[in-house]
Amino acid sequence: MSSKSGALLLLLTVATRGSAQDLSPKELLYVLNIQTWRVRVPASDDHTWTFKVIPKELRKPFSSKPTNLSRRANQLLALRGIGENKFDFVLPGPSGTSRGVLDLCEAGLNCEYYDYSWLEKLECSADGDQCALAEFTVGFGKEPTHYLVLVQARSKPYAK
Image (tube, rainbow, N blue to C red; front, side, top):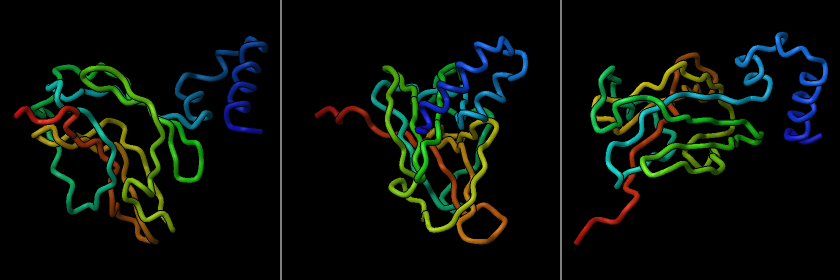
């Protein structure tokens, strides 16, 4: 059974049993392997978010008051695990939302052996150029060695 049909079966079971009180929204997201955050978007229409896996050494310190981002964290970022180191995503930007598939190996992670944990809230750098959303431990250590981050990228060419 595919993950889509399994998720649909679960939703139909919950709906027909009338037991919505048995599963909280947080539990349902967990069962469906979905992670969500409310995020700020780049302040400039010329920039958008892109995903990148970076080593711990390249992560900028986070700040509670990053600049170059929208004032409020009211846009929805969602990732849904689809197996094989891949996630479907819904990614907000200043001029709309994009959808696609994030392949962690293509984003820069050594996929031979790793463990990860999601951050409860995005941790953005003071300049707003990086926002971390997950920690990775590559190999058999216990400390994070890499981070999955949103990085600001130009969405429009420079004016001549």
